[in-house]
Length: 462
Image (cartoon, rainbow, N blue to C red; front, side):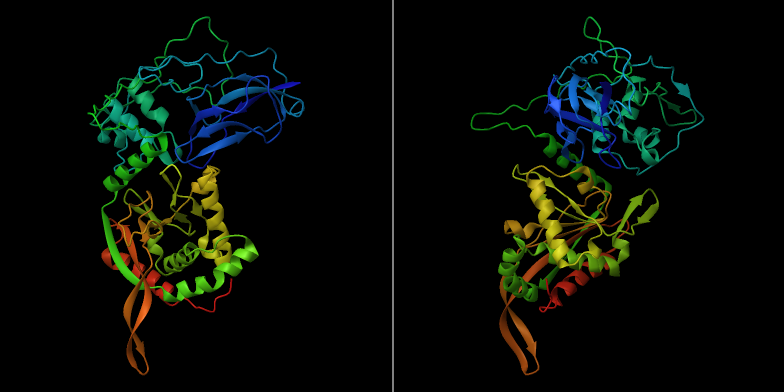
């Protein structure tokens, strides 16, 4: 039988690491091909990792709660299927020793066998990158370790397009946070571990924390509460949401425009078709696909809404990928993405919306389901709210909230004169990044979405 490494898979374009949440299989268990072996959390989604080959799990190299770089080994399997593709191991490899716990009780992130840090070298100058994208994880580490935003703007990054990764900032902290600004800027030059290191033999005693690892984060004080109060710690997803909302408000100057739309045509159309659609397709026909269709058409009319910002440059997106905010049973929020929404008809949009929403609520989304969004729609009306001021999903530049649909008396213009009638109205709230979207563009865009909703053809087939 061949011994093969199971490595942390790449789970998305911008995802460089994952946290092992739970091992679904234990040493000695027989595993079928494509059977889930463990649960992994990234900064986007929690997902299950399947086995590439069928075989027996012989070693677990990474414990629950540890952070693992993409491509790093996480387990060893013995398998017949891989015998022709993988050379047998010359000797059984012992599992990586568990790293020492940090002072706050959590495990130190997994790293391969560390190399001794090299001296910090001075360079002629580090490139200044103001306004560069910084992940919530990097910003969190920076706050904990006292790294200023100015230093982050100069810190060389090894990630995609020069982004600062977790390893970059941890290496910088471990090197003593050398000065990065001024005439003689400096950069941490700690030797990087191999991309796919082999498991090392277990030492007789737990290994001390290596010098290349960042010092354990200081324990945050627990707030004191008096009688009658309850202290609730945020879960991992809520912490990420909180950080992203703070980051978005810091990055983007938000402006919100409002339009009230007469959506009587789409209300009557849905009421006419929803029961037949349920019988035919076994799925609910909601208003959300109609809203997405109107937004996609408006983006085609105003493509400068479908952009992102990188420094002093505007990146205009060709694809129209619309994220839809979904409330989870836990009370948290997640935003799966409908890719190429402009290329789907109403039936296709309905099926896609229902599929993503259902999988979101049972934690079955994949990282690909959450990537690549260029615009976001949030339905605050589902909670009975008439309007809201949504916060932009970075690095997008705009987001729309649709409110509850309410019956109102309205003036109806007819060839015979004006009449008073009962119509269905809904508020649209459009928040946009005032760095690149001025009031004219932001206002015209939300007005165009309202126009598409009001002009909806009641004879549309689905």
